[in-house]
Image (cartoon, rainbow, N blue to C red; front, side, top):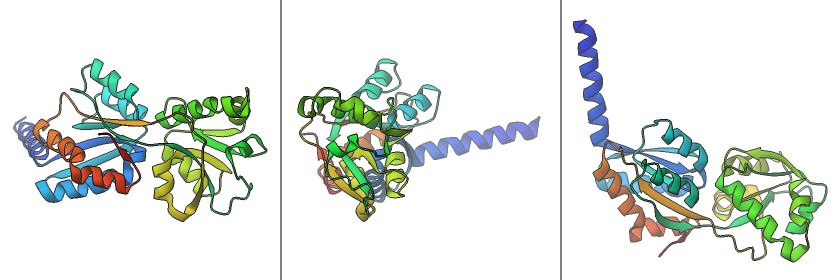
Length: 250
């Protein structure tokens, strides 16, 4: 019994040390490269470790609701952030960046897709699932394009979907590997992929993906978590976001 008690004390002490020395950030998959750089710069300035967990915003929300330990949450849309704020998991959400939806094709473009109209043809299209912000934005953009290409355009394109991915990076990976003829991702994802994909811009579709960040209410290190958010919103943080293709929210 005494041995078990000692183990418990060691575990508690270790947990306290970890809380003081760093934070855990849950962030939308599309923020991967930008947040990796933000975290590196933050670690250098504060001498504190930043553990990053990337996934679809919906997946991260569920993890938080189920008790996952995190200090900061960055969502690719307002819905998931607002839900966690209303449920008491996050203190408040702050808008910090915007993105846009584009079509990507493999670098050799075997299906010879030259415009969004070509997605109606015999192609294999991948998009993110409906619960994933990137998937919702993609569908919203397609239905808005009905006004340009005619009623039924979106439904025809969606009939070409062969896979609904758990995150926007899943979409990007399938296209980059040539497992799909085209995919719909964020412009920043396409930028991160470099020459592995080619980008096809959409006409004006009035879809502006917006990102929100907030500190978890039960964070074990709120002070450091707030400092991370403040750094993200600082001129240096904004510069990093812009470097990776994001538009910053003023």
